[in-house]
Length: 256
Image: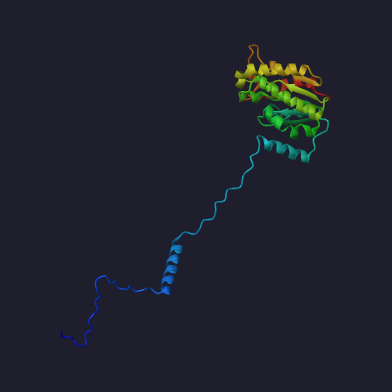
């Protein structure tokens, strides 16, 4: 066989032999891996800071702002000692000239909001006990009935309040309850009003240093309906004529 001079004849391997693959150098492989990791991290979004919950807001009980305002005023002008304390719902709160209606009597008026007996019980430590009054006059129960509470339940709540006052202020403090008033806007509740009034009247009649003032029947017309002329436009709160009836009914029971 003739041999061509100067030409390198490629070497062929027999079938079954494997050609050796070229090997990548280790430093180059490591560099590629590091570059890959860097590129992946560069494209990933920055870690998010954990979501911070808003600070919890304290939920105050109903009418707390009014009670706090009473305390603020007390800190500026200390209420009179041995006074007559009027406490209860808005029928007292709106009696803004109450001191003028009872001249010569030291009055503290702590009527607040549209309170119920539950509310008065809740705040007794804030607006009853600290004053050490010689007499406590209570008007409450009207708003309780609006919440579908029965007249008997109103009586039970009043009984609880009465016993709390006795426990903290003693048996010599006079307690006066002003009956639930009838009003045109709540005429449908009159049967339960009468039931609560009757139960409380009987309860007070059996105790010393206790009295019940009946304004309910004084505010009815000849047909047995609440007198419209005693009320403001809302047919719930009283005008001057209504408060005049209350003033005349309550006055004989106040302690000098």
